[in-house]
Image (cartoon, rainbow over all chains, first blue to last red; front, top):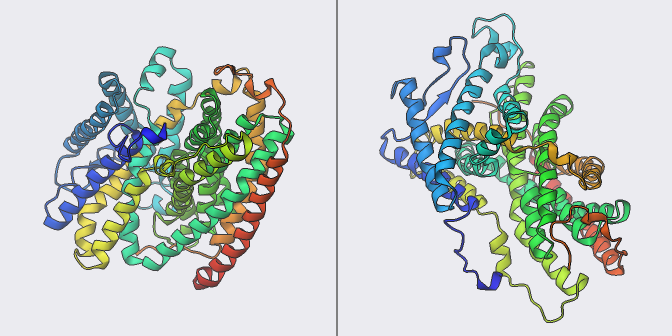
Length: 484
Length: 51
């Protein structure tokens, strides 16, 4: 139990911590490149929109390596770092390595296909690529990876899909990407520090209000309408109002629920988050493209896995910017995504506090175990550690830039491949993996029907409308800086 | 003992709604509404006014 744990337990054995180590490894590599002007990060493969397939990828630093050498070096280095993590986490490294290799190369294919100009180029870009028609799908590569992953996870032979799942780790990949995203926010904050701070504070305020309203309403619906027990209803309420899988597990631990409870709820979280990922960016683009930060924050408050939220944010960022580009407005890339992630980050950060509160409430009021105490260290153990990596990366880059220790150009030179090429590739890995691990058979399992109905009802009638309202209330009128 | 892997568990027994649950739910909602009003006012005064 918690009282026997030390503060540093899990630092080398959990996905959460390994996202921090891998993310910060690349961030520090970028900062070293910025400090020395030695191109230590330019080897990372960068995928671009293409009509001629030979121009579909290249090294981030033009001319540093041939495209194929860059791709192979990226594979080798990414494989080395993730396999190191896998070994420390005591996974079956051999199986992980083979499954990772399959996922890596499939993702490369999905990325190249999705970047084809006939599929991805917006109307404004057709001329640039010498084409006269196309699907104008923008960030279609994410959707292609998602659906291809879904095909693998649901329709390929069971032996194959079970094996590939060994390396399909959407939460891990997205956390690495989010740590790297911190550097992007750092770079942006140097140019627009005031806006970044406003986004941070507004996201925090929206999250506090959301926590206090979502949970009791979801719990009450579970208990009163769907007649769930306290144990099921509490885990369901945490999963749907806070942060999906992690919250369900944290709550399960806090109230000492049976292991099956958070596990079953987690499967629902993944399936519903997938549906939100497909539906919400399109809906928000259609109706809220004039309130881009509100739209981004709406995702952060309503999509309940980090992977699906960041993925939906990336799609939304592309879709909204493509749409308004037609009206002559050119917002800087990444701010809409940042607003989606910012609110989600706050939600993640409060999991520890909320799990602690629930543990206290359960021990003192619901189950009445007099004399039993809940150690405050529970807050630290339940705190999502990748958030530390995100803030370290953000404040490190911003601090070095604002304090004039490094010039903006130097920072951009070292960091750009990390916040751009690397981060986007880990996003792509996340999409492929989300598809692979999303098993629609779970919904058909006996016993899940009523739980799924409860989850769907709360999501559609409480979380989404209230989340959209809170996002609007705390962010309306905020506009991303325009592209330089 | 509860069966840890029994899938039908959500419906196995109907637990009565306890008075303490009412207190906690109502307390949280009231705290949420107060937080909403106070924080929204602060955000409007100090943040959104500038955009």
